[in-house]
Image (cartoon, rainbow, N blue to C red; front, side):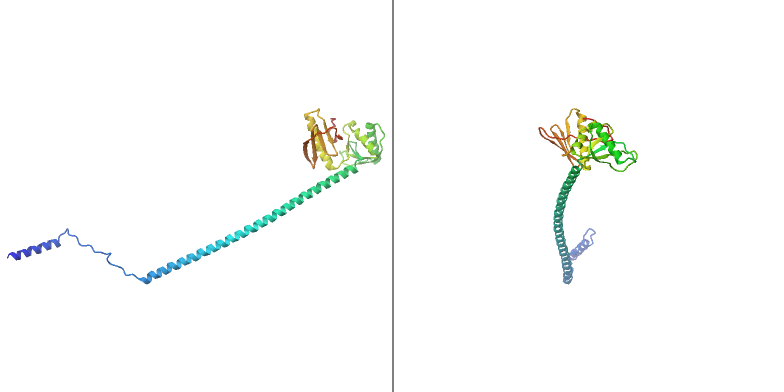
Length: 283
């Protein structure tokens, strides 16, 4: 009897243990389950990756090759540009040198023509301000000029030729070019030119270039005298030079150059050109 009771108790204890609500069920180990490894799939993926890498590598090589070609083309273009630039610079230098030589030749030619004109017309004087008319004859003109010359020189001066410059225009008084027989008579008239009264003036027969340059020098002389009425200012028409004390102003092609000089007794021919538009002022 005693043994049977013990067995019943043991059974009830095991049941209570099994059916206890707080008892936990053992967890299943999922990681213990291994997936099957397909080697062919892995190899296929590796092959695909290797092919992609090769393709990318080929493209990179193509890009590198293209870059090298571009660099080479740029280097060739740069070299050609440098060569062409150097060639153009040489040509420009040659053209500039040619232009300088040509300008020098032109200046010399102009100076030569200017000198020839002035030399050929040194016997002439230009008289401005004489009454003008359309019916005037050459004999009348010569007599009018001789009368004017006699009034300032008190001498009978021989005139070779006298003629009006330009065509007649109403309201405009044309200048008269007078050619003398001798240089002595011409100089005599020229030295007495300051005795003339407005509107008559006597000037040398000079080339247009010389007249323009001397007009600039006369304007400079007027500026100097406006600042100092007692200043000694002379103009050398042959060298186109204005002398003011130790200052020398020369002019060429309309450009003035000022220099300081030292001289003792220079032989200067003072000239003072006037135009018929303004009254004469003695300086």
